[in-house]
Length: 109
Length: 113
Image (cartoon, rainbow over all chains, first blue to last red; front, side, top):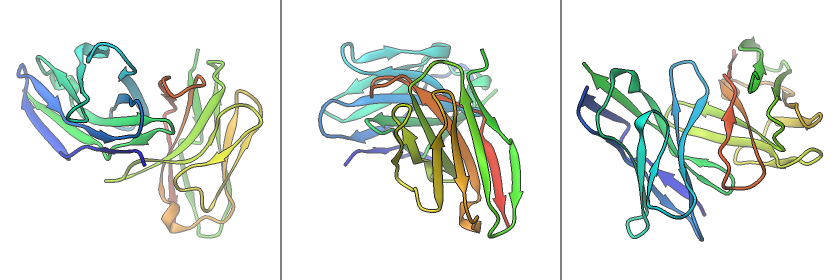
């Protein structure tokens, strides 16, 4: 069965510092992995995805994610956090889309 | 280009009442989905429609029915609402295939008293 785990309910980071939001997965076969962001009272927005190829995937708003097959991880990263990055972040895996429980990112000025 | 639209934005129901949540997309996507979002649970798939004319159950289908009215529209019906169905409901659409990302509507916040 497919599953996704986001081990941290909340991540706090100071503006300008690098950020990492963690995700691990369990799938049989090739994983199709996604990151979405949800701002307050809004629907989810697609950030980036890994399908195949380069393990470092670049996405919207300066975010990137690193696919690590041996550690079954797909962590979301950004070199320099902004206050406006504060939101709820979801990792997900396809076939049918299975979402993690979400990580709230809080960036402090 | 509105993307994915949902109506209504908010709804309060009494236990036992029925209602239909509407969803439409203008991106010519074949696949459409209904999710519910509950605190600490992430998003859970209720039903999906891989293409016009087909619907399938997701992870939490009990208490819900769906209709894929045409390529653009996918509705979710609660026949007899229960307090456990208090949630935020999201509709999404995508191209066919597991490698394609989904596009989400703004959500419907439903409270069942």
